[in-house]
Length: 172
Image 1: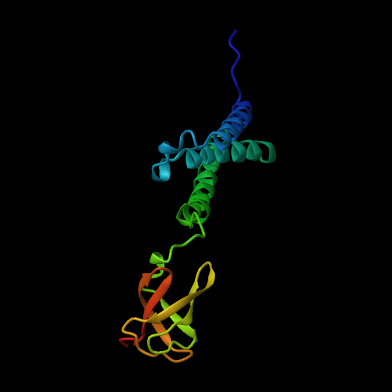
Image 2 (image 1 turned 135 degrees about the vertical axis):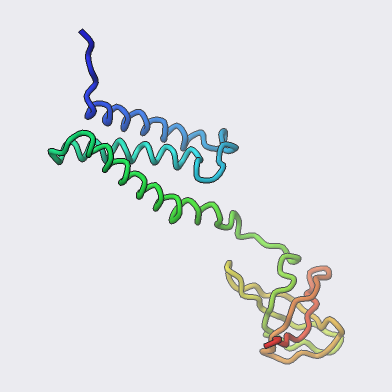
């Protein structure tokens, strides 16, 4: 006589199995990082399957619905939760800055503000506001011009740690 696995056991075993695979994936994610190719990455697939098993098991325990209805509702719940997880957690995490470090060259083209006036053929100081905070740097006029306090400047170039700037004049 064959023993038939009930749907409730299937959801429970799936929940346990997918949970263990998820833990292993978290531990060894760097080793299989190349599999990450958009929506069908291991994180979304595992979360989709985990949400199906969890919601199906909970629905079977808490409701008297038919198994087919529970499966359909579990698929819908899992789809919604996976969508929310992907677009509101995984996508922002993937596009977040990996490092807060910057190079002087990466600041070229940014607009700063003069906090120590820049004299003719001399040095002053500017601040640049970035997402990482406020950066203060030594600056001189690009054409050796004088730039007054609190003027906006455009960073043209960097030479040995000194920013070469011109007074910023917006087009609009």
